[in-house]
Each structure stands twice: as structure tokens, then as C-alpha cells.
Image 1 (cartoon, rainbow, N blue to C red):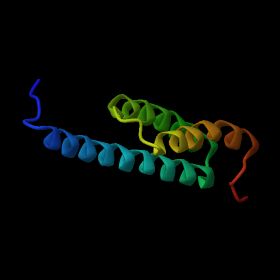
Image 2 (image 1 turned 180 degrees about the vertical axis):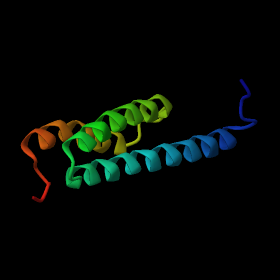
Image 3 (image 1 turned 45 degrees about the vertical axis):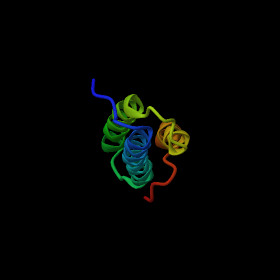
Image 4 (image 1 turned 90 degrees about the horizontal axis):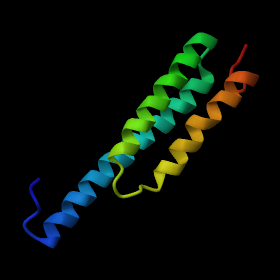
Amino acid sequence: MNRPGSAGQGRVLADRLGKAVAAEYREVIAEAANAKRSSGRAARGRTLARLRRELARVEQRDFFEQPSREQALAAVYALPADLATGAGVSP
């Protein structure tokens, strides 16, 4: 594995990676919010499974513990309750 040439380069790399992971968490959060408004129960269930897989993939790359991680976890893991009650779904 290559190492950065200086501490400054290491910080720049860490910052860049952190921003990329934070953007992925924001995408998961947005998709979870959209899933609440999805009309079909089967589609919502598939979306939940996909978001859980995506969240796990993002977490594997989150070496710097982004603050948006907790929000993404909460958004995805709140979905099963919303799916069971139909919350957020208009008739």
C-alpha cells in the first residue's frame, strides 16, 4: 500500500475520502426518505433491502466515522416500522 508523502498529503486524502463517504451517506438518507413515499409494499421492501446493503458497503469505507453515519443508520432502520404501519404513504 502506498503511503502519502507528507502529513499534509495524508490529511488531504483523508478529507477527500471523508467527503466522498459523507455524500454516500446523504444519498442513502435521501433514498430512505423517498422509500417512505413509495406506493407499492413490495417495492418498498426491495428498497429497504437494497438500502441496508448499500449502507453496509458505505460503512466499510467509512474509516473516519462521518457524523452523517448515525443519520443514515437511523433513516434506514426506521423504515421497517414505517413499512409495517404504512407511515408516509398516501392512499
